[in-house]
Image 1 (cartoon, rainbow, N blue to C red):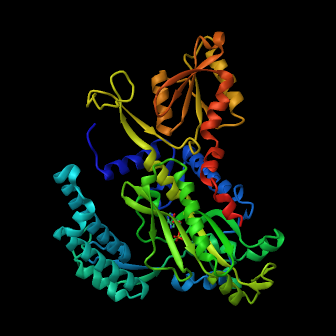
Image 2 (cartoon, helix red, strand yellow):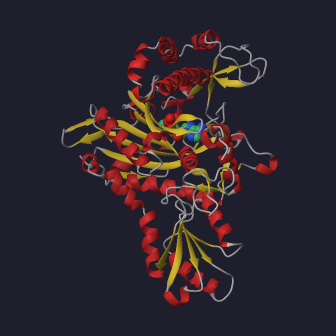
Image 3 (spheres, protein in one colour):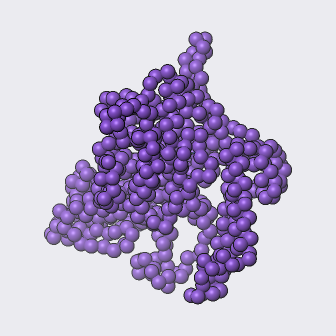
Length: 538
Ligand code: GAP
């Protein structure tokens, strides 16, 4: 098969999402709405499975984590207290020639990534040249070109981090000029000054005649948890350490909205705030970093696709923060943030509301404002990372099986397959009668009617069996179950596996256990928990 660039692959994934009912542009008949998307019939199943996997990993695996579902609208003072009214800004810059607007920090981050790419290229070239005797560490330390690139990269990185921490907009612009960063559209360096732009959407509640109140669409779900801290702690008789989990919509007026559902204006978050004793927060920060990474890795998308990225610029509320990044076709990108938020939010809500928001710790016999570790993951970004790693255009040998040796060249056929983790797959199995007669459809429906109480299953009798298999491959269905003329006699069906394309003859009574074993999240929870559960209940 001809090699394609990552950009081409990504375009195909976006097209695939639309063609197979995963993601549609919002209000598409009116040409869509920028950075807003709808999930289709398969997308919503996949999304719900992601949410279920997250929710249960929090609320089932931890007896000290409970969930809530807070409203999107909140009292406007919430956002004053949280700091979002004053500080939830992006530094923006316009190119005067293309009239395009960019985030200044993103332009500089992309420039840093370019240095990284150049260094990687030098290393790859040398590895090819020296073969087995290549010593990468020594090469990086001694090669003049790599040393120069590394120095430039480190200097830029340090300058950028300082400018962001100091909120120095003039310096951000100067970096862009000094690095000779050009607008990707016009190719020029005709930049405006950098200025701050608040990302919150606002609307009005109540009629204008009565004096309407300006309220915000929440830019994070976390504040719904903070303002309910006392409600949950008291009614649930929760003892520190404990957590509150929530899944819900969040809204941000993103200026640079790109890469499909990676950066949206309306999106969904899965957040958990874990309340701990002051002074113990960094221990818990480390604990949650490891737990969340295990949660990701248990899905089997490839351990090498994850990395931590510590923040250079800490948000106004944090004393430690890291991202879990995933290798997308457009590079390593943030999927989840883990933040040690100190006691900033609870203290600030106490100040603005005039209410005492504290916890009496019976073991210490004292009251304090708890510190908070937050794990915050975007459902849509998680969806995108799953899709990107699942999508494959696979070469097939002339016998229709996977072309492992690559011997078919362009002569063989190809199939598009989504290797979705079976736990997340929208449809777990498709039941198919070999032909549309001889009682086979009735038998197939009988099997389906039995399985449908426990699993999302589909039925398909249209077209050749090969075409039906391909349709299921394209939406990531792990099992195809075919009823044929022998089924009535031997009580068996053919199970065809999505990833290997191999087939087994199995007894009908075994189907339930085969599907359960592959799709039951419990199997993953066991992998995640290992011996770490005991720690979390300390
Ligand atoms: N409460 C903390 C918080 O909101 P964040 O790093 O701004 O932290 C957390 O967001 C996660 O929400 C991100 O890691 C990302 O997965 C998701 N997210 C943030 N902005 C997003 C956007 N515009 N579109 C899609 N997902 C987004």
